[in-house]
Length: 401
Ligand SMILES: Cc1cc2nc3c(=O)[nH]c(=O)nc-3n(C[C@H](O)[C@H](O)[C@H](O)COP(=O)(O)O)c2cc1C
Ligand SMILES: *[C@@H]1O[C@H](CO)[C@@H](O)[C@H](O)[C@H]1NC(C)=O
Ligand SMILES: *[C@@H]1O[C@H](CO)[C@@H](O)[C@H](O)[C@H]1NC(C)=O
Image (cartoon, rainbow, N blue to C red; front, side, top):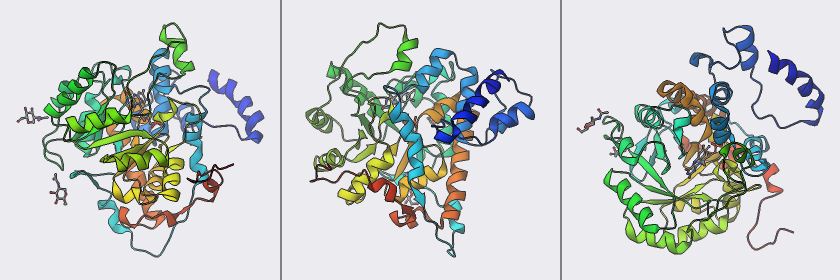
């Protein structure tokens, strides 16, 4: 393969410096080139996808360059994106043995605001799924999440409308009719935003996810190359506590603030009566050097651990494996989202999304067994060695100098 011949000497020469490896080498490309009937630029067979990072390679084969750039892009020189994927190595696991773990298999479900889900992860809100599947777009997310009984959090800027998504809700889930949460962005004309909230209510959404980490457009170098827009261009949106208060007054649905990145904002959110917080740096897409979710969760754990008991805490950005999920849950996170892996899986349509869900469920169960838990309730921070995060953790009241 041309790209392999080009890549190998480069990898050999730079390995000593431990370069950032975007996707770990699990032998996928070797397998495809040596064993499978596959050539570059073609979609591998779905049954050859063995882990979520494989979907990224698969999607890159078939997505038009501009679509790929939109899914893959991150802010600035993309350090925040890389840190999201790299940070997990700083958190070692401390497995415990000689414990009864067999029940875990039937016991990885969670409850959020009275709704039951079969696994502690969900499809994060991400705009424009039509790049992956032009016709079905987010309908695949709806149907696969419904059939697998996990949560889907629909993006306001989905390719399908709120009403089109509602029309395919499954009727036979753990909650009866399928439960989704609706993500919302404010816009300058707030009457549009309040109408979006009403549409979500009218179609039975069970929570509003207000994204707060996007007060302005962001530096998206990779995206700019393909956007066809004049660059730089910039805009802002209304994004204040007063607007949160107004939303609070306008809806009875639980409100989750998405994009919380500090213990200070987490504390203020709880004080203002928010129903849930969602730790995220938007997959590194908004601000260079914004923190990864495990770093945010650790900051909260060290400064205000009670927050994990006060409200459900969700988290995303850089989650790719079962152990990533378990690390966040061990710190007290209730449910973990994934963005890009599902967007990439969608190039296979419904079956791809469903396989992604099943692969991750399986990893959580197997990793959980080997971690020594029989239920998610058994998890605690003592399963983690967090020393490598201590070095940088912010302590409120110190200026950390
Ligand atoms: C293509 C794409 C579009 C996104 N659009 C939105 C959006 O409309 N609203 C939002 O709150 N987050 C959006 N996100 C961020 C995701 O909700 C999530 O925070 C992020 O993808 C998590 O990181 P991960 O991709 O590493 O899993 C988007 C992410 C991607 C990759
Ligand atoms: C669910 O039930 C509604 C109302 O009875 C029906 O219109 C809809 O088609 C059903 N959805 C599916 C996916 O079967
Ligand atoms: C969720 O599960 C609990 C415990 O099994 C059950 O009591 C409750 O009724 C379920 N909620 C819904 C909405 O089905």
